Amino acid sequence: MDTFFQNEIVVVAFTVGVYFLAQLLQEKSKIIILNPILITIMIIILCLTAFNIDYEVYHRGSRYIDFFLKPAVVALGVPLYKQLKKIKKQMISIVVSQLAGCIAGVVSVVLIAKMLGASKEIIFSLAPKSVTTPIAIEVSKTIGGIPALTASVVIVVGIFGAIFGYSIMNLMKVNNPIAQGLSMGNAAHAVGTSKSMEISPNFGAMSSIGLILNGIFTAILAPYILKLMEIWIEF
Image 1 (cartoon, one colour):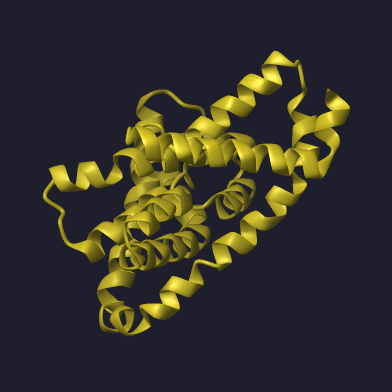
Image 2 (image 1 turned 30 degrees about the vertical axis):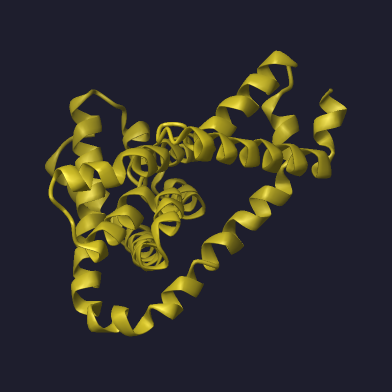
């Protein structure tokens, strides 16, 4: 079975097939918590556990999926281009809001983790939780976090945002489409943006710019924010 999962074509076909079936399940059931990414992860974990397959074996076979992750993020520039006129009119508000979202996201998770007794390494691993996985991993490496933990947390945050994000915003009376899209991209990165794309291209475009700007701001500012916080509170 290990040899079976070392074949890149088999792994890609298996993963995409499971995701496709998970999408069908959510479409048929209309149950929001049955997020396709969450279901796919659970099924793959169950299969690897049931057949006693080491994750490294699966990971080696899934290198093509990893390869296409970064181009997939870059492809989000297409809806941005289509909404360029609208974005230009709101540019200052968008940039300021995403800067505020970046700072709030890093500071809040650091304070919560510190209050719960997390170690310095864990705190640094959680800091880039709201940016897309490739950026989060690089930020985590730079600031001294655990990249594997960061990747896991990013996925959990994204799935939570995709499932509950719009419901929470509606509950809090955040009804402006631009604000909703930007918030999803800022807080739930690519997974939230995928959910926004399902609603409409307009939501998807705003979520894309939220994802991109938060990724840029977090990559640049996270190390400095953490250094300042180290001065104020002892990690």
